[in-house]
Image (cartoon, rainbow, N blue to C red; front, side, top):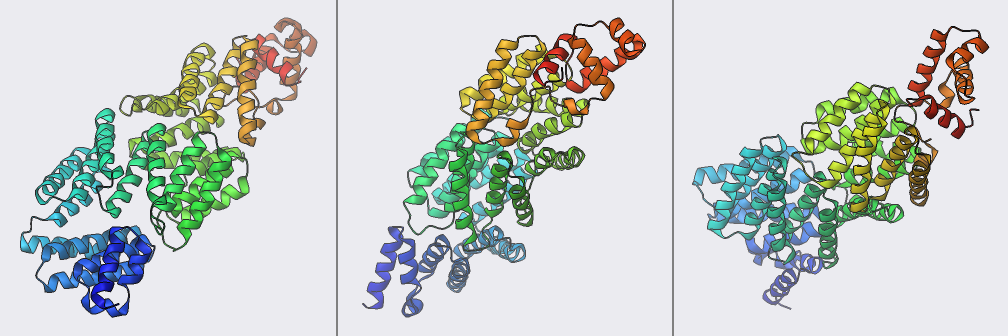
Length: 542
């Protein structure tokens, strides 16, 4: 086959998205002399999508040089931009920064109004949004969108609109932001865009849905991403990240075994070739599944690997420390994580963990402050899962501060929302607290229904740590933390003795008996003699 025919075969493979075949053809030494810069961009795409990073960067550098020799600074700048983006994704920030600066210089020197200028604006807009300058970021994406329309770059138009959608979500305009993202996904799912912006937008939109706790949308777009990846046999990027998202959705739906299978496969895909940025996210997801199943040693090892990859280990690692009984260490870790996080959506998950950890440390003031911030967040990020999280947090604080009637109202809302969203584990956790609140109010039959239902879910999921937890208010002590005198007092209370009777029998003053009884109430998280008696009976203290 002559070089002209061979080159045409390679170009046809690109059009069919047969990336492996296209790479093999375009990288043939016999074609080196006849490859146009457009062919080299195709070689870059094929190499990148088959996981050959070094070869992809080399092809794009060659295309950049050819465009410069031809005097086409606009296309040379676009090559420089995509080189920078690829290098940034591989955490090669010095090289990436150099190529980004070159792209900017070429555009500035030539006063170019081209696609590359628009793409550079998307990078600027993304930085603004990530640093909390949401309005500025939105406006920058608008400038990029205008350029995309003028030059007819469908990928740039979609990416700029997607950036505006994410900015709107951060500004609390959830409905408008989601509507814009849904519109963008039309062009993504119908194959109107090139592979790179398609994969980038897929992953970014799924992350946005998870940020605002929109689990339904996250699941829908993850399924679409799975189909897109499956249709391209040789695809390497995006496939591993897709599996991470699938694992997250399966975990939320209560399919923990399936979620573990998917995340193990994701780690394999993201480890070869090495250097793929989403590996840290995959390690964290697997650590979370191990923690929830009570496999603490495995979880701790994976959190360590997560940290080495530069991915945050919170709130999972702090919750692991809590589960291991290191409450002070957990409190220090989560407090620092909350203090350092400025993004409102990211803070929500941290605040939820902070409520739980601070209650375990019996710092109800700090827990209430975190729960109140969560409630305020629901006014700007109006997703139902976040509302359920906030109501769970509020209910746990009210329960810990001996306000069971108010706690029931908050926890009933949380349970209803989790059930509607089909998130069984979180629904069961809220049911445990709701059952505890009903016990304190004397409604033992309904409480037992709630607690039995929660136990059934924990058992089916394999949530071993939750099965070990007794049914009592958050932050309450276990019976083992009662002193010998306090155990004597609660035994006599359970026998129906008055404070005067107890004082006589134990040779104490009534004031001392009252003090012991107050300590018992505080430690067990109860607010009445009847509730203390029920606790004593349930936990075989009498």
